[in-house]
Amino acid sequence: MFNCSAMLHPRVQHTSMLRPALLRTLLCSVSALVLSLSATATAAGTAAVGPVTIQQGTIKDSKMLQQQVSQQVSRLMQQQQIPGMAVAVLWQGKPYLYSFGLADQQAGTPVSADTLFEIGSVTKTFNGLLSAVALSRAEFSLDDPVSKHWPALNGKQWQPITMRHLATYTTGGLPLFLPKTVQDKPALLQYLQQWQPTQPAGTFRLYANASIGLFGHLAAQPSGLSYTDALQQRVLQPLGLQHTYTKVPAAALPQYAVGYNEGKPVRNTPGILSAEAGGMVASVRDLASYVQAYLQSSQQADPHLRAAFSLTQQRYASSGAMYQGLGWEMLDMPVQLKDLQAVTAPEFVAGTPAQLLQPAGQAKPGAWVHKTGPTAGFAAYVAFIPSQQVGIVLLANKRYPNALRVELAQQILTALAAK
Image 1 (cartoon, rainbow, N blue to C red):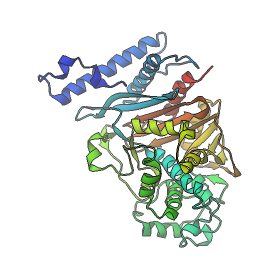
Image 2 (image 1 turned 30 degrees about the vertical axis):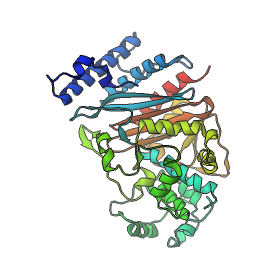
Image 3 (image 1 turned 180 degrees about the horizontal axis):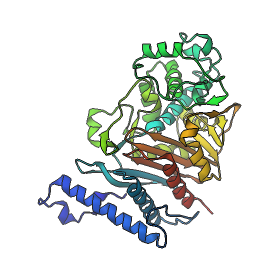
C-alpha cells in the first residue's frame, strides 16, 4: 500500500527538529511531487496535464499495477487540487490498497487504508443490498403499493406508486433533495402527503434521495428492526465491515478525514433518510472487502445475503444505456467512456425518460456495475465487472467531476481486463 508516511527514512521519522504535523506536510508535498514527476516522465511525449493512456491487458503484475495507479491518481490530484485519496483495486481475487496525500491538511494527517471518507450516494448500494435481503426473505414485494408499508400515504397521487417505483427513481417526480424543513418523520409524512408527481409513474427517471431513501426505510420495516440496526445485523456484520458507519462513533472520529470545498473544511450534516440515501462513511479497506464480497458472492454462507447480491444487479428499469438495479447501476460490456460519462452527467441525473422492466432482467456477469457518490467535501466512485473479477474504489476528500472519476476507473479496469 502506498502511504506518504512510509517514504520517510527511519532516521527522519524520529527527528525532533520539526513539528510532526509540519514534517508530515513536507513529506506528503515531496511525495506528491515525486509521483507527479514520475507520471510526467512515464508519459514522455505527451502534455504534462492529461490522462496516461493504458492499453487493455497491459498490467501484468502488482508492481506495474502500483506504478500505474500512482501515476494516474497523482496526476488527477494535481489537476483537481485534491488533498487526499484512497484507492482500492480488486484483481485476481485480491484487493490492492493505495493511499495518497492528506486526510487533514491543517494537522498534516496522511491518508491511510483506514481513513474514513464520506461515500455519498454509494450509500444507496448498501440500501439496495439490505432491501434485497428483505426481498429474499419475502418480507415485501417490489409490486407492493407504497401505502401498504405506510398507510398514511393514501392520497390519490400515491395510489399507482409501488416499491418498484421508489427503487428505480420513477415515482414521477420525488426530488433529489428534501426541503430543509423536513427533519423528522412527521415532517416527512406531511411533505409526502402534499407532494404531487409531474410525470406518470414508471415513465421518467428523476434521480432522488427521497425516492430510494423512502424505499430502504420502508423495506426494512417488516424485519421489526430500525433501518440502521437491520443494516448492521444483516449486512455490515456478516460482511465483516467494522469501519463502515451511518454515523461515525466517537472512537472512530480520529480516522474521519476532513472534506474540502473551495479550500474550506466541511463535513456532511446528517438529515432525514441520510442513512438510507447518502450519509454513510467508510474506509477504503472496508469498501474493498465489500466489492470483493460481490465478486465472490457464491462463497457467501448466508443464503439470503447470497441471493441478495444477485438481486441488487437485476435490471428493474432502463434509461439510455443504463440499467437500474437496487442501488447499483449497470451498463453492458464492452463499455464506452462516453456512455459512462453520459449516465453520470448532471443532465442525466436531472431526469430522463425511463422504462420499467417487468419481469426484471437477470443480472449479467458481463456488465459494468457502478455507483458515484459526492458530498459537499468528498467524492466516491465504486465499479466492478463480475465476469472479469476486477473492481475499483476511489475515495477523495474533495468533490471533483464524475466524468473524471469514471475515466480514471475505466483506464485502470480496462488495463486489468484479459485480452
